[in-house]
Image (tube, rainbow, N blue to C red; front, top):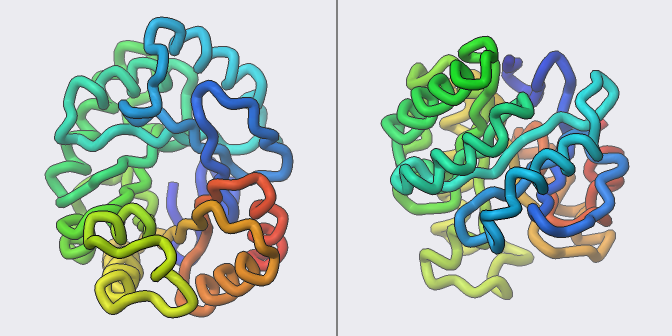
Amino acid sequence: MKTYGRFELGGRRVRSVLLVGLFDGQDIAGADAVALDLRADRMKNAAIAPATVRAFTQRIGRSHTSPALLALVPPSVDTDALALALSLVVPHQPDAIVLSGATCGADVQKADVMLSVEEAKAGLTVGHIAILALAGDNPAGALSATNLAGKSKRLAGLAWNPAALGESLGISAAALSPRLPCGLATARGLILLGAASASVAAVDWLGAETNEDSVSETCQTALHDGFSAIICERREQVATVNRLFS
């Protein structure tokens, strides 16, 4: 499930993870993995969500040559929303969930248990779906990143989202470059340390930036710092990530 220094899912190396909305038609070609955004505020029409998730998984395919399938799910604290998201995606056998708003080991453990329930309901092998903990999108999660080791055998990596964390700290998006404010720089380091402590991959995050030079600089910095993959918000970022992380 995991190899420290590389982000691997189902025996496949993952360099780029393209974040896609449930109801958008973004081109996914070239991405090593796609993460379907199932957070509660993205579920514009829950009534048609089951059919939409099914159509999406059919579109990307589930063969070994297809991109790995992930789902960005609500935080463990929002039990009902997380349960809904898992019930939608688990039957389609995703390779992993990206657990947003992870604040501590208990959040990862709760998601582990809820995954086990849904896997059993779907007749799947319990423990097959990995967890990528998005602990760096909130202050508590960043501070707890070094304490996630051993909390779940599903844990395959730790990720952060500088824009989301910056918002919680009152930092505008314009202040995220070229040099991170100290709070965000500290959180970034804690995610890297937490991943190393748990012997899992560290995953960076690219926002809406499409300037080639800026994306390249972000990738090179991520590689230098020890990140194994990057979550991309834009399709245009994928080729650069794949090239520089190869």
